[in-house]
Length: 402
Image: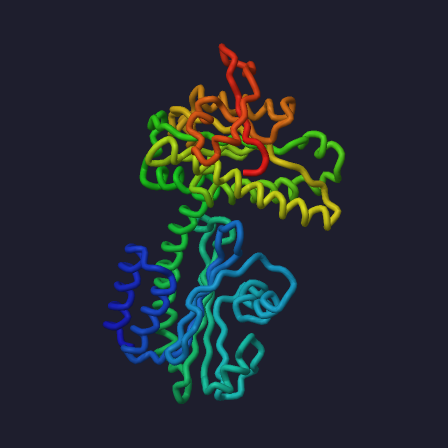
């Protein structure tokens, strides 16, 4: 690979990074250009850490001959085969030694001391080089602080000095392009995890002005855990967070599966909204989420009982009305949420579940839109005063069996 090809490849990497080309395509495009220009790369792996609640790092692979899994996501390190393989890798060697480059001339008898080197020698590879490109403190987010990559060839004599020099010159550009794309994905992930899909889309599309909001009609869901205060006072404190996670997962999964959007998690409480082409669609979706939740709770509680862990239920309030949906807060701390009398009312409705001995309560406005197929199970439980609401409200529930 001569200087002209290095310049052309560098330009391609920079443009591709700016365009947001997926990381696996960046790696494959880079390797294909190396081969076309005389640098005989036949296998490559690149790894970068991730700021993600489920997995710790992502790996990208390319092979000139064999089909490979182009993208892999690895969970947080736990004892097992995957962790052992990582500990035997050149990348882990970089982590513990602080070095940035290692090479094994497999055809010349260099040690096969890293993961897969023995298999690579048996497959005819003659040379292996791995590099680490670390980010400065100002360019580090969470654990995303380094780009790891390795390259192997079957070329007689292995990589030439010119090949190694070209890789050293080009790989910082590949690292920068991959980092650029990865951080863009991280921004989307963080927004989605902490704001919800719809709110994240709004924020990432530029709707971040303070006070900017839209008036929408929506079905409102407010749920919390039954007897949570008593449970938290009587069980081992180490059980509280796992318990909250178990039940929050059941609620959130049910809401999202039915097309709803979770807006807030407040301790054991969950505020969600359902939007639809019409109000009846939104209410039907909320009731679907409630049915899904009942099934998840039955399975969850059965499993927790087997494990000897505390179990509970979910109180749910449903309401429908107009709300303001947008950015609320100070100049340097905003929350994308919903506000309005309807939000206050649904929170008051769910607070009556315990005293009225009902797992589900809905407002009269919501009950008026219950699908006809469920109307026969609808039951009024009378007028009740909601704290902070001027007049008494008629509340309804659905009888068991739907």
